[in-house]
Amino acid sequence: MKPDRRTFLKNATAASALLAVGGMAQARPTYSYIKNLKKVSPNDKIRIATIGMGIQGNFDTQAALRSAPDAELVAVADLYDGRLQRVKETFGKEIITTRDYREILARPDIDAVLIVTPDHWHDHITKAALKAGKHVYCEKPMVHHIDEGLSVIDAWKKSGKTMQVGSQRISSAAYEEAKKMIAAGDIGEINYVESNNDRFGAIGAWNYSIPPDASPETCDWDRFLGDAPKVPFDAKRFFRWRNYRDYGTGVAGDLFVHLITGVHYVTGSMGPQRIFSSGELSYWKDGRDVPDVLVSILEYPKTDIHEKFQMVLRVNFANAGAIKNNTRIIGTEGQIEFDNQGIILTKKKLPEAPGYGNYDSYFTFPEETQKEFVKNYDAKYPPETRKAEPVKEVKFSKPDKEDEHANHFANFFENMRKGSQGTIEDPVFAFRAAAPVLACNESYFDQKTVYWDPVAMKRRK
Ligand SMILES: NC(=O)c1ccc[n+]([C@@H]2O[C@H](COP(=O)([O-])OP(=O)(O)OC[C@H]3O[C@@H](n4cnc5c(N)ncnc54)[C@H](O)[C@@H]3O)[C@@H](O)[C@H]2O)c1
Image 1: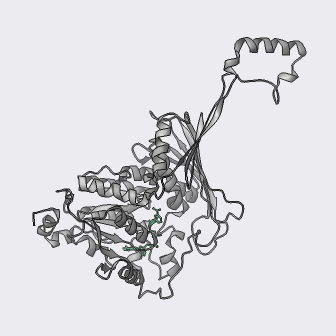
Image 2: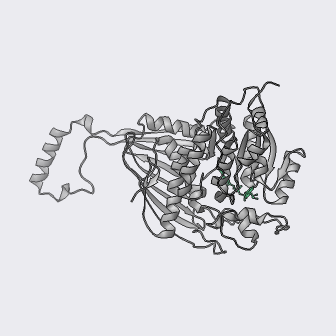
Image 3: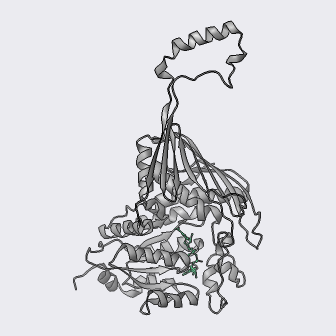
């Protein structure tokens, strides 16, 4: 067998690979990163492992395997025994399973890991994986706290490895099309973006099913807690972790992040400069410590590529009214609306002439003044300036059987093969989307406005 990256890793000794694997509670390792010494050969199989095989871990793994016929699932780490057992039932008895993700990172036969754990583990496992020489697909939001972002970016840059973050919707044709429309000036200058993502139901409000055998024996509670405060075993915390700040990032990290990622992708924006949220825990008073109603306002500064605009985001998990979730990017000459089918572009342009009459002050003028007004108006606005352009509507339906999730993985694998770090959602892009949503939470919990520098990716005073 010709020498390749895997044999290099083997020769570099399993011990050094093991050393390169940093556990959350361990001291920071001092050795250097395993550089991207060789691309994945186009003929090589891509060998993947999933760390965190819960709901999305299953979907991600299936999407990864759909996207690349030469991808192969080798190993899985998870903290609930039932899920490891389920892996054998669904993906095959030969899959190596463990509770300890570090065993996976130490294996030289794994090229890439999918990190699909609760949010509080993302940064730790990502940095350890990059250090161990793995390519990384990490779920959104890339980090749990704003202060963790730059160290992940640094680890990624040093590693030379490919990394993709998982807001897969930007790998759909609708987002590509919206990006082209905005670049072509189809909606004029963007001035407002709005999106709501309301729900009404227990599962929608994250109260996922808890298996009857959940216990400290079947769940690795200590490892689950990681750097979170030590509390006694609680199956609700383990299986419904989104409801607790110690592990999750609330509705902002779960849902706002997809929208912001999409808006940054289609507009080229790097992020907001001022963020404010207001919210409450209205209905799901089941022990959770995150709001179920949250409204956030984000102010995007003018840049070389867009004018200043405002973004308003809302989630209401107890909306017993009519739910009409939508996302609209509004500009001075039209709007782009996203729905499940694709996008609708509506174009409108004001005529030059302002018009007069109806609900206007014109009729309050004395008769002579009205005559004078009309004379002046007619002189200033010839007929061709009075016609509004007809409203145009252009629908873009997403292609039949589009698989954006697999596309997102295809982009990851393609970059891995090329030895490129240029994925569609690399850590810099992903942090620029994650930081504002984490700031939405900070604003809500600390009751303050958060000031952000989207270019430097740092807080502003
Ligand atoms: N991109 C998307 O559309 C999308 C959709 C859903 C979830 N997500 C993200 O995916 C991640 C997982 O969400 P989920 O709904 O699948 O949660 P989940 O609770 O269903 O699964 C998480 C799994 O991670 C395991 N785990 C926890 N800590 C671990 C560790 N240290 N090592 C190994 N395994 C560990 C748990 O045992 C659990 O089985 C979250 O970050 C979430 O934001 C993304």
